[in-house]
Image (cartoon, rainbow, N blue to C red; front, side, top):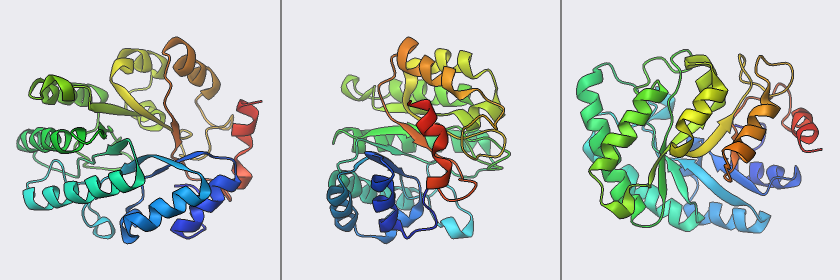
Length: 257
């Protein structure tokens, strides 16, 4: 979501120039580029890819994921593509998007079956699968729209997995979505800490930089993650810069001073 004023490959150059050593790729544009081209660009810039979104259907037509939809062949193809890209990009985790649904009960059975299939395929090659609850204001109709639903899904799917794969399905905890869905960020971080595989952040309410112009006080939450909860993973910056990405990075510089 950062460096959107540049072409996809050029965003990697801009990220490195801005001081980042790792990136996540939540854009469907990734799959418009051969995996080896992206892998070469990452290597050239000295960047690590720590997460990307699995193919999510026809994004331009409004689709937002396949896992909860009754489209087994499409989902299976998405797994094949994901496994290839994850191996070539040396990416340790992927986000499996649920999609937009209207039949909660029937879709949930499909969702769990597809997630189990994803973990069996991707976990066997050392790739973690994460799922992200998304608030209904940002994405009306998204199947996974609460932290309790995500936790119950992880528990139910994990029960059917062999012991060596039970830690391969995790929660993507996004501060922005949590604040809109539930609030109580500190307590929710503590409650779901054992399930968290990746973290993303954006300012609330406008999804811009997570700075002091937002309603959330972010520095204590980052301290909570690193120290009390001993989170050692990356924090993805999934926000819409107010101007250029570089102009908006002052909040990060102040945070790390």
